[in-house]
Amino acid sequence: MSSYKAIVDTLLNEIENESDKDVNEAIGILTNMRKGQFIVYLFLLHTFLTIINILTCKLQEKSSTLGNSAVIIKSIIKSLEDYKTIECFAEIWLDINTFATVNNISIENPFQGNKRNRKEPNDLKNFIVTARTSAQYTEYYSK
Image (cartoon, rainbow, N blue to C red; front, side, top):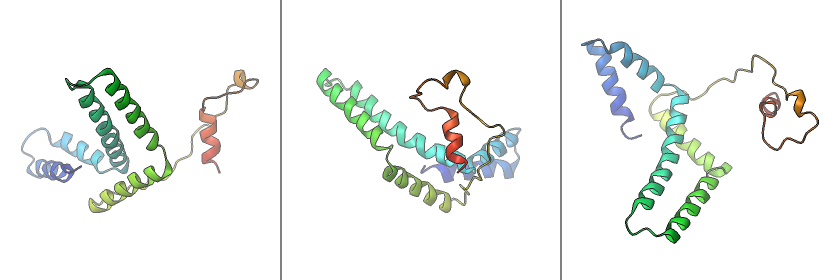
């Protein structure tokens, strides 16, 4: 996150200088980096990879025991479950909005409806489905 501005500046410099054949790649990378979708993915990956990095470092310590490892794994699972809450997502979303505002990135993405109407397969009509299917998401967004 902290090096985002430096990366954008470097890409802009590469594009302005047109010094080699990598200008087209720089334009493509810069275009993708300025999309709201990229910023959302960047923040989510940063958040979850930070947690996974902590887990990896703790499990690789020489002094780590099986009991400590179990406690660490349970705490990481609890942390990941906490990220599913509305409050935690709102905090991440606020950070995303702040970052997007500072870097002049539009994160608004108009919703495009599905081109086809998704429905549950006929084979599942007589069963109770415990896992989510795409039909449930379609019903949610059509409201």
